[in-house]
Length: 379
Length: 145
Image (cartoon, rainbow over all chains, first blue to last red; front, side):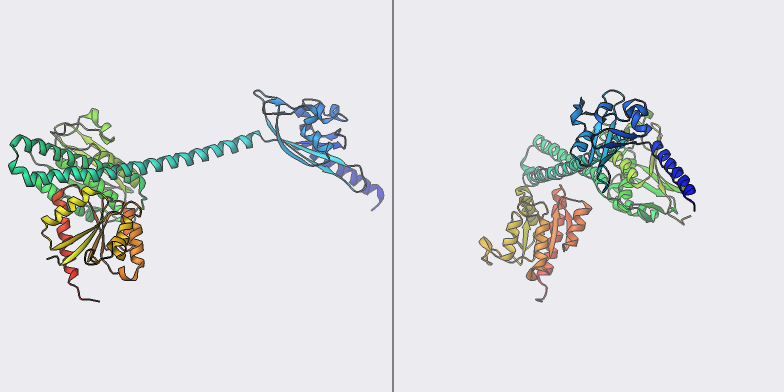
């Protein structure tokens, strides 16, 4: 290879290198040991808003004012200049002038001491505004989420402890009331016995309220694992457990068989179905007994479980409200209840990944349904 | 004559009294002894401190254990009891207001023989206590190991 060819190739490779450096999106500069610009690329020139050629030979602190916490730094405090004069490396984040265009710049420089040349300083200035802000936003979201989770957990624990601890004094109120009635009821005048009866009933109602609240909050707290289950067996179990209650009201329940299998959590689904059947049995015209039919139909990938009654029905304007906590449409003396039953059904449906809905007209009964995922392979 | 002994571990005085009443109603031939917190329960079972006299504080045939107790929880008592060779086989029934499946699982995992939830109705409590008393009487007649 002759010297001319290798010199040409050397020049070509230098030119290529300069084009690469010139096109780099971060600001690049080469300073001498006094902080004067020996060379810089276009991006670096843009930082000071000047022509690139004007930059050469200028001192760095005259070219580009940096800010920190909203104040301009004095020229001699310029991080690049300080690093050069102290002959060390630097890696700092500084600000550009405040206002709408304010950016965060990372100033990263290295003081180089070659063996046989003058020492020099290589400076890279990159706009890190987006990355810093994104990181800050992510950190904030993370922190907020953590705080929120802790707050929810604390609230749930609190609700649970309150509800739980309310039951002990309630047991005393109710229990001693019952003892009083049993031991001395015969000696009490009729109005006194009636008063005692009110106390006992109120105690029992409060216990139902506390139990329903506990069940409701438990549905949020407990971990749920869904698995295929035999819905027909589950319906039978629920009806068997409610036998006394249903017989007391002389409710007639029919189940359309077979019932397709679904994917659900047995405990939660039982609770939802129990509440739906209990409502169907309860909301009947005075003196009548309930006729309830339970059925299920396959729809694509889901199974719709239906509970239909012929009771008093619900006015359309209340249809949205009945699934909310503490919503009651009747006075205690007409239909006793806590106003939590259907809220439990709705939350149970949420935990099961199921949809819940209803159709009803006053005087023509109600239909409540749950759309549950069908068990794989079931017909 | 008291043929068997039940140790009731319960911090709520109302609950203790109601339990006593329910046990009377059940007409059980039992002696009811009481520990008012987790530490007392441990002392009773060890026969230490004021429970050292076994004629006054006989070793129980069955323990009814509340979970939410001062000083040492029911879970801690349960775990401790199951680690004692002399208490490994002692029937311990958890009787509590908590129906959390987490608590139920934990109680069984720590060696509870049964888990009963306290209700508010006295007649229901009487039925439960009657069942427990019958069970306690039955096992008090078991042959010595």
